[in-house]
Length: 512
Image 1 (tube, rainbow, N blue to C red):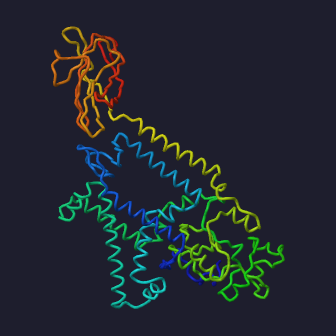
Image 2: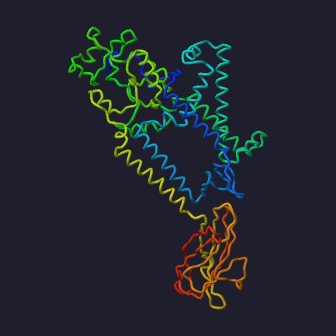
Image 3: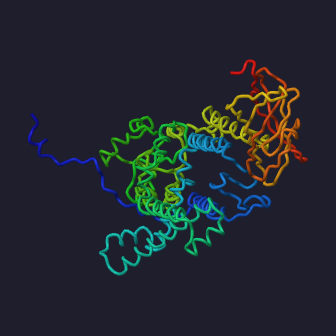
């Protein structure tokens, strides 16, 4: 039976209330790199729909366009038709393998710099800092009672967030329609309801994920950190606190001058260097003649956009953005200690460095079997897509044999079969093509628009730009046996190009 102490003990809960994160502004190489990535990615996102690309008089002139009514995807000089969706599938596979490659080489660099959640959260945090002040001012405002100033600042911040969210949703729909035309329709309030609905949904998701949830989505909502956690190994590059150098910590700068480099990362192995163990020093301050470089200033925690303490080791909340490196380097400069107490490193390198060895060179760390295999697979798919894109023909032929009836015997003894053909012209100009039948001696062809008396061995077809020409073609021949045949088309212009499709010619003898 349980003791009374157990029964009356404090109530335990599995839910931890959210602690709001107010990152402190910081300047440094990694912060400037994040500024650069944010500027580039946001510029690409907002500007791309407005770029023009001349494809001739028969195609849209928007550089990047997902034309759902026309069932086309345009990207500059590339045009993807629905039956060529394997190009899109290939690009998605490359994106996935590219993430595997980046993760195995440089950890969660995608999460730290280029992920849309990171970019928009970073933008929203800068707006918050601009309106409410830096970290300390935000903390004071959060604790202050509601009044005119607090209401005004909060309302201004959320209003700017909503404007950014609306602009985000509006920019996205411009990828699916002609941007200037749709912009005029939105201004005149006569845009299709699908456009308004999409803007509303994307506005809500951008505002909630980037402004309200922020680090909560990265930690709890996104599956990618968990996938990455299974992919990381001892040679993956991560933002790392060098405990072998920073411990034991001092509390303030007064004793930082006595900091001594601790050459071994094992808490119980300091005695071999003539020093007491870190465990002993932590338990008995009098037995603590030396200190690590960390002065326990919490600057790395204050600048972290997810609010974690990198000194506690690798965590799912760390997006490896490097801002804690900038903050720690500034502190190390002020206390006169070497930089990179926090830095990009691997578990294997830290184990070597903690024991006084020399870590691997960065190039050797990157060129390992895992990253090489990922790169070879990624590059092979890219080369295959480029080859297929360069070798593809802009004419496509599909044949369907009519089965009711399978064949008809004409008055002159010839046997006739009927076929439905589809000639797809994937260029932005009209083209004339020649249709021929192979493997059927003496065959003549005609269409519904012709009489049998005008039948010829080849047919001339006019195909409109970016269209599929559908026709019913009759083929008559003296052949009475079932035979394998093939239809082929060839463009009549200088560029040429064509396609070939196999089919069957049925006759009264051997027909199935």
